[in-house]
Length: 369
Image (cartoon, rainbow, N blue to C red; front, top):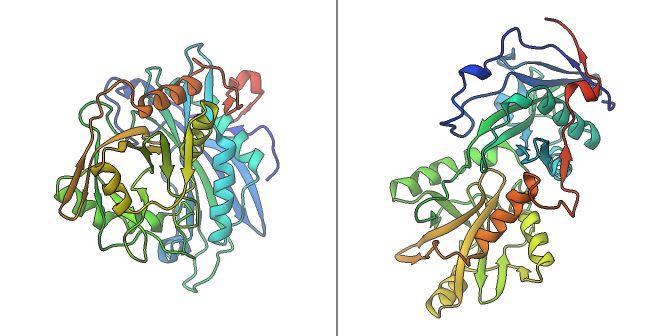
């Protein structure tokens, strides 16, 4: 799938005017266009931008039966200078390739991935929200379309990229996110697909997630699959603990998703001379640090949530509560630092943003009517 200017079939009439940008939710309204590319005969081909809409797929498609599908999630932002930016698409491209490898899906060329996203965002640039904390969420996905009931890697795939104007996943108002440490179910085990972004990982979290909500919590805090003692991640976020003057987050050992925001947080901590450790941390250690006053704050980090302070953790009969109001919390300056970079309010010293060119500047080819 070579890197090139994509042909575009524009919508006959945009739905932008009907979208309520004053009351955005998360992912229930989609922009006008989507990227589409097919894989068959051993190659990716027919890359194009077309109107967003239903797709045709056979009931025997392998993705429906054996879960051969991978996806990603990233965001584009309208800067304070009017320039649109996509945040760290190269990291999402790397992670997508890792997910493809694990699920025997043909990989996507990294530059083509980034270029396709840039061109799609340029076409639907009017869908980018302009308020701080809002963004155009980008969802690339690849799934097997070959119709066959044999358990095998498919011969045909479809690669789509869709976008949606969104608010942040969690509100930054109130008492922070509440988490219930899961004592029974396991999200991932060593040697499994925990590091891959694939639908099956999320389907397995739905029952425990419903249990967490029924018990008065927002999300599930996942523990290790062996002993259910060591912290791994939250439903939609990686997690950080500030113990004393050190930030601790679980290591990437194959059972948790290598979050792009997680990597951004670690980089910013290093930039600011903060101590951090990527190491196993047990609930026993978390509770001990809480009891002796060393556990200063807990927060989640993820593309959808950005940085989300944790206000409460339930673990069996133990409940830990945290004050998320103080201005000196690290979660506050990390959030502001990341959003400032994403929106051009701060210097992008690491080159994280990909600037979106307008369709005219990119010289894109418009076809159809």
